[in-house]
Length: 640
Image 1 (cartoon, rainbow, N blue to C red):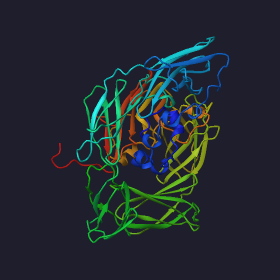
Image 2 (image 1 turned 180 degrees about the vertical axis):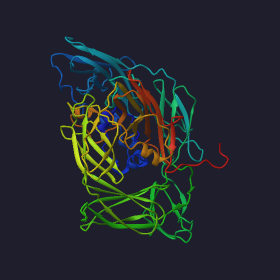
Image 3 (image 1 turned 45 degrees about the vertical axis):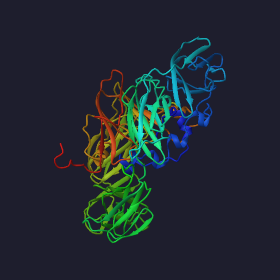
Image 4 (image 1 turned 135 degrees about the horizontal axis):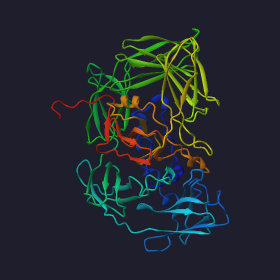
C-alpha cells in the first residue's frame, strides 16, 4: 500500500484495484481491518506504476475539475514553472487549492513554455503547487500561497525548483545470507509535507510529499538525493531477496538494511491438538497431508489455512520470517463443536433469514456465521469446544446476544424479548435545535437496537424493560451544502419501564478545539482512531477493539464530492476533528502496511486547548508505538 508518490487526488484515479473491506459491524477495530498489507491485495507503487511519467497524468486523468469549472472568465491566473537551471519546466503538474471547502481543487499542466493558465479564481486565499516527476528518480514539489483580492487583474505566480540543500540519505542493503544485494529498488518519501501542517490548505487532496528513488550498486550501496531536510520512510524491494523498511533522516548515519522474503521460502512445522498429540490427517492450504507425526512442509507460501475434520480451522500467516528455512511453532488446532438451535420472535414463532454470527476470543480468535432456514433453525460451527462463545442474532433493527458456555455440542435457543416498554430519544444540537438523521444505538443486557432520528430529532421504539446506554452518532457525508463536522454526543444511561418513560434528550457537545492527525503514509484503510479522555495502552488486541468501539467521526472530506468523477478507492494521509470540547483526547493508529505478528500501533494523549489547530504526527517507531497481540505476551523468566 505504499503510495506516497502522488498527491491523494491523483491517486484516486490511478489505483485501479479492487478494494478489500471488512464490515465495521462485524469486526469492530481489529488487526484484521487495520493490519492488511499491500502485498495481500497487490497494491504498491511498483505494481501500479504510480508516477506522472508512467501514466501521463493530466487534469482530465486526475478526475479533478478542469480550468473552466466555476471560475470568472474575465481574468486569468498564469502559473509559470521553472526548473533547476531557470529554464521553463514543461509538463509539470500544477494544483490550485482553495482555502474554502466550498470550492474544488484545480489541476493544470504546464505547456512547452512551462506555463499553465486558467480563469482567475474568486477572491480568497489559495495554495498553488507544482509537481516535477521524473520516472524512477524523484517527485518534487514547490508551492506558494496566494491572496486574491476583489478587483485584482490578471494574476501571475512563479514557482522555481531549487537544488536540494539537505545532505543525502545513504546506506547498504544485504540479504538473509548477509551478502550485498545489487539491483534493489530503494524509495524514500517524506513522512510529513513541508507546508504548514496546521493550516487550512493542507488536506488529503493537497498533501504534497517528496519522493526519491535509487537502485543499489554491486556492493548493495545506495544514495538518495535530492532531498528536503527532514525524516523519511524507506522501502526496499528486490526479487527474490525480499523487502525491507526503515526510517532515516537527512544527514544521519548510513542505513543498514537486511531484506526478508515476504513469503517464506521454505518452512516446516507440526499440527497437534490441545494436548500436544499429533493430528495425522489435515489440510494446509489446498494440500492434503497425511503424516503420523503431524509434520508438514511449506515452500513459497504467504498465508495458509490449516484444517482438520472435527477441529476448528486456524489461519497461519508465514510473512516476513527471517530465515532461508524456518521451523514454525506447533500449530495447535482446537476440537470443535456445533451450535444448533432456533431463533424465535417475541411471539415465540420461528424467524426466517436471521443472520447469526458466533465469536470467540483467546490466542486464536475467530468467528463463523450462518442464517436461519424457514423453520428458524440454524447450525453454527465448528466453534471451539473449550471456550465460551458469543452468539449474535440480527433481526430488523435489533441484535440479540447470547453466551454459550464451553462444552460439547450445544443446543441454543435465541428468543427476541417482548417489547413491553417504549424508548424515545430526542436529539438536539448544542443550541437546542432538533437534529434529524442521527444514528441511535441503545444497548442493554439482552443486546442492542439501532434507530435513526426523523426530521424532528425523534426516534422511538418498543423495547424490553431494563437499563440502557444510549449512544448517538453522526458521520457527515461531505456532499456540497451538507455539514462537514460531525455532531458528537456523550452517552446517556436510562432506565426504561412499562410505565411511562419520558423522552431521553441527548444534546450535542460543541467546543473550539481542533485536532489534526497525520499518518506517515497514505492508506485506504481506517487507520486513525481518536477517543475522548486520556487512556493507557490496551493490553492486547481484544482490549484495543473494546476501547476503540466508538471512535470519534472525523470531518468530512468534501473535496471528494467536489471532484467531477470521484474514484472508488480513497487514500488519506490525515484526519481532521473540529469543534472539540477542550480537554484530553487519546489518538490511536494502526499500521496497515505491517505484516505482524499482531498489530503495530501508535498512541498519544493530547490536551486539546481550543486555541488553534493542534497536530499529532503518527510514527510507528519509538516510544509512541507498540506491538499488540491477541493475548498479552509475558516476558520470559529473568527478563527485565
